[in-house]
Image (cartoon, rainbow, N blue to C red):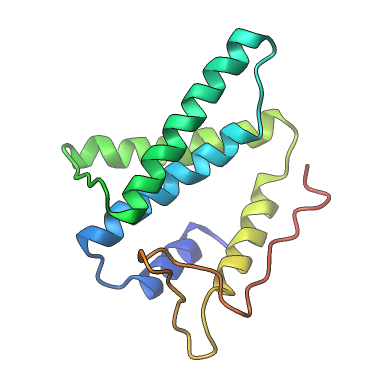
Length: 146
């Protein structure tokens, strides 16, 4: 497993991305950030409130992007690529500082994502165009990695 296999997964799932695919993917990315926020809490009431506000906003924006209720476009491709690469690095760092095996977790999540394809190698999509879990989907087993 490597970044290359993740890129291949997307290339097979969405070989010619449309504007809708782009908005859905940004929405899914924000959705994952929102899910991370659900897994943390502030150490005091003000910190916890602030995390909750951010989580609610991220969840709302994610949902609206995935449903096509709002759309975005890139204003600076170089800055976008830099931010995406930095997010991969900082996400890896978050797992590291909490003593988690991010490399193996990513390997298992990647393997799980390939189960979102049917027996003919075609991905399952929901009504909004998000790649979804099909009948053969297998959740990644992350036990022992945290």
